[in-house]
Image (cartoon, rainbow, N blue to C red; front, side):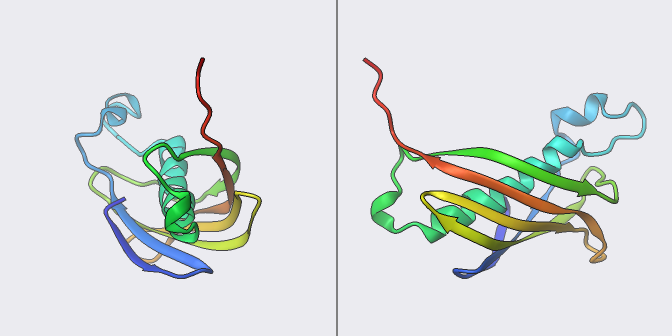
Amino acid sequence: MDEILSVSTEDITGTYTFSKNSYFYEGHFKNNPITPGVILTECMAQIGLVCFGIFLLSEEQVSENTNFALSNTDIDFYLPVFPDEKVKVISEKIYFRFNKLKCKVKMLNTRSELVAKGTISGMILEETKLK
């Protein structure tokens, strides 16, 4: 995540630029690199769930030991994202209860064209101590 443009209890908007030096471009695809869908999904999860979830939690609930887990995605992809391309992620809360956040997310390119959209959900994991 590069920048959070706006955040409220109902939605979050942030941006990210995919560096041309990222390791995943080496093999996806040779001489015509595009950003893999799993990386686009990760970007949507980082902005739309993790950053949003941290905002929605009270300060007392977030510590350096707070862990987040992606639990479900249903994403459709429409356009490729190329090296050095900047995207905007917009996430709208469907619900946040019992430490589980489910959102409607979409990703737009700099021309405001729809790159991907769908739903994504995740949860906050309780800290466990290893014995």
